[in-house]
Length: 445
Image (cartoon, rainbow, N blue to C red; front, side, top):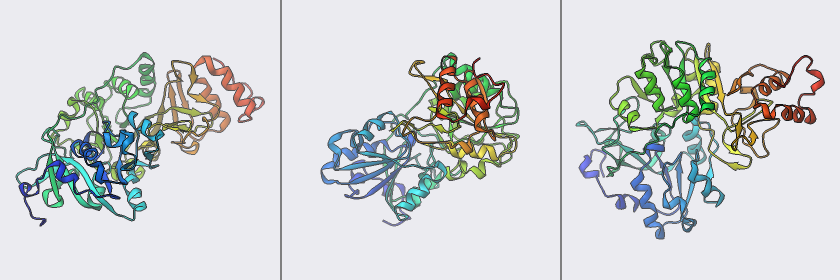
């Protein structure tokens, strides 16, 4: 088909598009709220003729049969940059594997490992405008790189997608085929923050000055942080993910982007995940730009922002400052994502800070999240030499440039009181920081 063909000439059905997939092919897909739902659903319907087809996914939002059903084992395998709740079950069954990555190089490194080749790219987009341009809408994390590398490009058109600006535009001439699937968008509404999360949010907010540029994740803690920042002035947004809380800050007048060093006057991110409120805010908003993940998450780009503050959550932190945010021991849980990218980038920024915020306990208070050493098998997300600031509901631990002795003292002070004595005893027993060389420091509040 000629590259000058019109939209109507390139429009086919979803089953026809999936019929172009052959055994042993590799399919790269758009991520999160941009995933091509119709195409991924149809894969299972054509399993009988397909064997050893690999999909490259990241943070899937739905439980697709091709990936979840054990009967698909010989037919499909999933390579995943970031796990969701359903993916953890499949991983244990041997039909999915995590791709270690830093987000700004996720697509680049996966293509490198594949000889620079990708058989098929499946993405989503808005209907085209009168000039044939479409918007890739809610994600640019890996999409543009995979689209350009693929031998066959199919976009799933959904009229419910917002038209986002920035680097999202793709012309119909760059696409081999389009299919239509006008379904409701996946939404992830904000959940109310707990008392513990609100306290963490207050501590984190105390570190954020007027004029700072922010990167925040998703969940109760980031929501609590944004609720504590509504009285700030001239904040900016340079983030991996847009969330509802950022809309709240903009509407409160706290975010103006006027003090940003780069992309001044613009909110910048790589993808969006939230509620209809967020998606409506993004639609044709000239004050928001989606850029490729290799740009937004490049630490050296992030570091050009003045007073760049990156906030990420974690599962466990040890007294040496090693941060685990992606596994529970040997059990893989999520992924590195952009955590190390943004944490490092913030520290390159003048007046910047990388913050790890976590609850002091897990399993309803049964275990401490601050430990003498990470649990066996834990994947290190932020190494000790890169860690900056750790926050729990019990306070702030400044770790950047500190010795192990100083780090132990700071972290034990923000550990839950029920575990402080025990933690110090274990640290002393292991010889990480012998107690006798810490004169005058009390580790018990």
